[in-house]
Length: 153
Image (tube, rainbow, N blue to C red; front, side, top):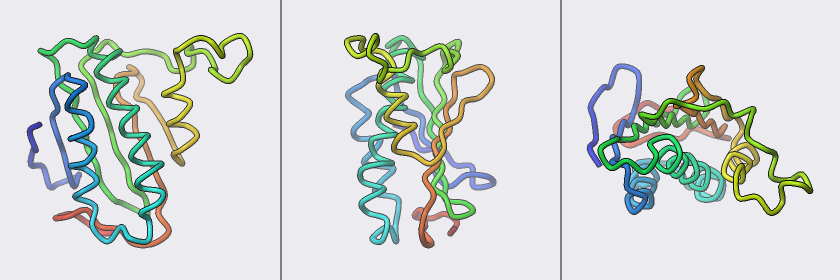
């Protein structure tokens, strides 16, 4: 994991190798840099942690196709009362609207779509870039939260 410095428009930027073993450490690293999070601990430790884990897993497994020569970039910041994370892989992208709804009876036994479903259910906003190789996760915060060394909402 390589922390990158670019204080102009983001608070924390990581470049993570495509290795599913690195996901837990990357998520822990992001969470450890969120200070003043006591009031938000439940939503951050469940909603944001699970959403970020799912996004990283999808980026590595599907976006980068488990290719260890590719990386995933994570940008996290607290702005305008919300914790935002952008996760970008080096894959060709996809159309999230084509992923089957895992809650429909005909899809219950199929493994695909569960991660996207979890992200949509746990976070306040989930959006993708036009190419489909970057997802933005947004968790609205009730009070000011600061990332260590970053801006305050």
